[in-house]
Length: 574
Image (cartoon, rainbow, N blue to C red; front, side, top):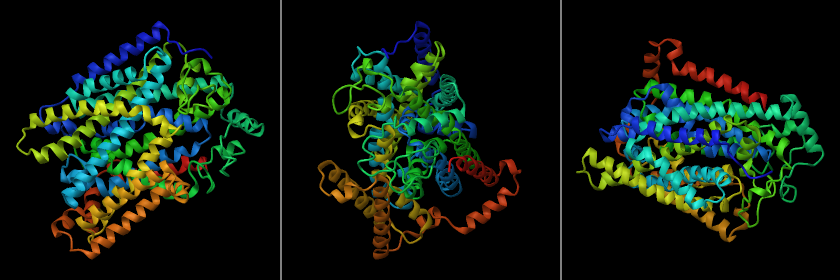
């Protein structure tokens, strides 16, 4: 396989599209007030909210990550996708009404409403760091992979800076409305591109679904799949195609054992969809509670076909390009040397699929969509992190600032984030050879204490601000300890634990700390308990209100339908 080359037509499509999306984003921007800039004026309707949530989640890093893990037969990566439906329904029922009623700008701000400023500042700082290390840096990393393959003469640093500045070009002047309006276009193009890629992959294979399964069975039987060190480490190795496509794996599975599906996936998913400023900010911009709920459910519905159009292509790459020589790409290994095939560098699976399968014209459009999705994801994290910096720190320390001054502060914060995230990108591949594993690993260490604080805060009237801040600090310190132990091989027994098990342990530690400290200290402020804890009366009042709506506007009925559809899709792969 030679170097990746674009035809003049493909190159023209990419340049025209990227310029067009920047201009469109600037044109759609709102910044008359801080509410316009950071929350789009709270005027978003449910289709926009749903598509924006989907697009922000199914970003370029997710596309590359899903294909990479599917190539390595980790099809159970789809568990993160379908479980989002369950989390979003839970989020819509319990958390969203409190979020919208409080009219907060940020998730840390809501944590202050329930507890105090200490919890707010802690969570805000952690979220900003996470945005830089996970969402923004991962998006830039994906863009650098694709463009480095296309333009090998450019240094990775130059490419990353160009991509970051392109994403910031419309985020800085336009705010959340620019981000969401461009995300809608990206989502549509991503879905179309993914469908096309799946079609051409099956066409290249010369067989349909049953043919793919038969060829995968033959490949596994012949021992033609590289499972790395799984055999030496006693990890699960699939022996048939049905085992590859099984979403429930044995307890010794390297990627997601069955107990991780039950405990770890809900924990990480809850943080990502219900506590993460990057995602929740889109729902905070909804025009009312119903549109926020409908939008969240719509996003869940859009997640279900992901296995067919974004995961399956990775398996097809395994069948089609497992022995493909990619040494001519001169792509470096993190450990030194160069990639000789996809087994060496599975993160290249998606780019290889694009350039090996798509015809001229279509290739340019899909690559443009991939890069634009990267820009969309990065711009979204820029906006959410700048919102945190501005509303949780600058406004708190400078309350006299006008709305216009707050917008300017947010723009400066965005520019700062561009620099910081660009500097972190080179370290991603040193942490993990799987982009998806890297994303989940960081969330597994940072999210458990936060999820504990939100869940106990909403459902327990006894927990207080002292318990919250102590549990956040204890959980965060324990997470840092696990990271240092892994880096310096301090505690082998802890290091050998699956990362989802570590997340579970951090969560239990945080829960117990929060409860014990709360019981040992004073009762919480009655006003905070009254306004920010869930009560049975709220459910009763809501039931009466929903009786006035037709069934297709009742989010409970829609949630039930969505759960049935999810059960059918998941049941196919059990």
